[in-house]
Image (tube, rainbow, N blue to C red; front, side):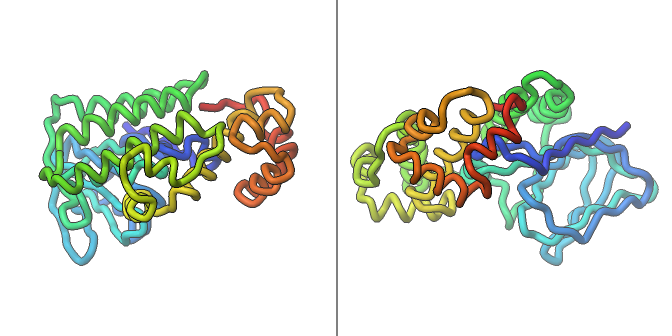
Length: 278
């Protein structure tokens, strides 16, 4: 039995987005690759066996084994000829995906792992696939399931604790909390740094390390994502949308929105209004 879901279109949730999930019972010798994936994908093998090849290494995997594909990595997967595998998977995009996965022991140097076939991790992956089959409020349901999966993944495969790493991630998480709670107000980097008791230069370095963007870029990206939500789900005037995401100058908001989204706020609303949003 095979089920496949993909959403390569609108990435509504910029923090965490499920762009693919499903399960596949592969035919003997079935091969996919070499190829490069768009985001992170976690595979869980439930029956049979196969080979995962990446960075010149071949991992022979069986039921109860899992592996992680990283974005930009050339890899291939091949089902065994005699006992082809069945696997479930979930693929993720978003600015927080890398941040959460780096809190685990699974990484580019250690991409394979073992999981309990009767445990919670597989159940969360299956729940994500089930959520993708729902039509009403689907994106909301998928995102909820994805957060549960990531929580379980972090619980099952925690990285070895490092005091500096824990402190850095705490600073990032607290800063994001502050941004998400105050994106409609004027935000200064000094204000964020003061909130998490660090220097603005250190905060910049942490954002670049963990999120690959500067604090200012993250704020703009988050505001634009929320603006898209408001434009597609409300009838607020453009000026109200602008002020709701921290722009008192409507012209500056419209200019910034077009630079990031590729169309004006009015054009975006016209083509996306009443569509499902998270």
